Image (cartoon, rainbow, N blue to C red; front, side, top):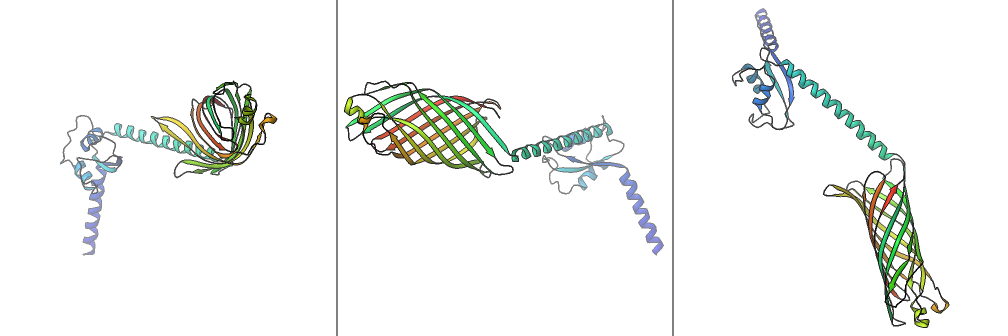
Length: 341
């Protein structure tokens, strides 16, 4: 009895081995628009008639129980295909394997490049740029004490700036600073005077923190700048147009983000600044003692990188202050910049 069982088992195993040896099999990744018939035709010798009753087809159906609908194969899934050796197209199979190997090599290269880029992003980085901008603006000012309202248009032929940033290695925060000087060569006022030779400047420093989950950065810091306002006291005393200079220190909060419009990559930044301290210097003694200003300013900035070095940018700025007078300054500017490292 034992000998008979051993003989039957041996016969079964030999039969199974012979049966398996009569097939070629391999795993196939289903692609878009693949059909079962299309796959079978591809790997069969030219002129082979595809039949659902063939041993290769029957074995393929049997060995892939997870496939529920052979008439609608899902792209990305894998199936194991069996072909009888007499009909198998070895040449097409070798071409298929070669393509898989090439694709695998490309994926490895892509992963390496992604890793290199990620590593490059985590390295310490120092960036710097210079930029130019021209702007148009309006200053509106009201003095209750002198019963006087003034408004003048303002043209700045140039604002020159220098920006820099430093990101520590493998950190999600970085630091930046900006410095600018802006010239206002002419303007026209409803008081009848012209404005010439006025210049403003500013410096700012911030700390930024990336929020990777929502792909934006928030930041905070200090800004220090000068601006000029109409001397209402001096005008009331002498009917002469002069300007007083104010120095202001602000606490600033802001957010920035890269985004796309119609596949065009853009960068935007929105800031809100509250004055901490101000000091106004009268141009003329007749201006008298001036009350310190307090208020806020907000700025909307937008830029587009033409290439790795050059970019164009635009901004909209609004300042509102209260003190000796009520004043507001609005500006709109456009320009370009150059990243030198």
